[in-house]
Amino acid sequence: MGSLYQEVILDLARNPRSKGLVPSADGQSHQINPTCGDDITLQLRLQPSSDRIAAVTWDGHGCAISQASASMLVDVATGLSTPELLGRIALFREAMRSRGAIAPDEALLGDAVALQGVSRYSARVKCAMLAWVAAEGAVADLAIA
Ligand code: ZN
Image (tube, rainbow, N blue to C red; front, side, top):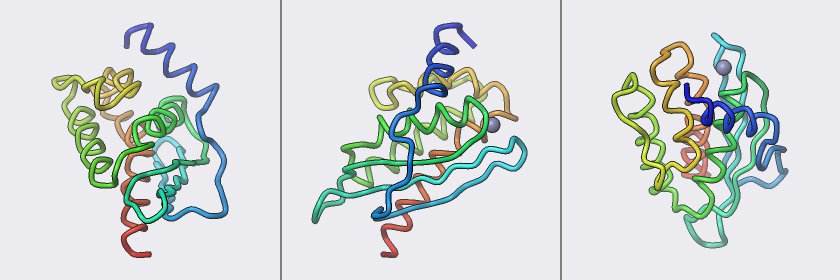
């Protein structure tokens, strides 16, 4: 992994964005990655009478990649509609499963481009994906509510 990307990951792991759960989420999902011990609960809150995401909050613990990835997701997801968010999650998954063949698009995935090196290490892909899988689960939770 490039040293600049490594720095982005370590900085976000030390200084997480929007960490801490709220009592009034519209959708929530808890996901674990038992092979690494990562654990993330992610919440979505919508703008009033809209499918646009007003806020993403989360809590959890685990390796630097899993924790940094959650903060990256916060920045990508906030302000998107839920279909747009599902589209971004699909793009991120495609890049993560490409074994380095597909570079994530920075315009669409923001700081998550720093995780592109992770896709060459299949054991770490689940770490990088965990928050994004939780976001998918939180969108599904919205639909049920
Ligand atoms: Zn991990």
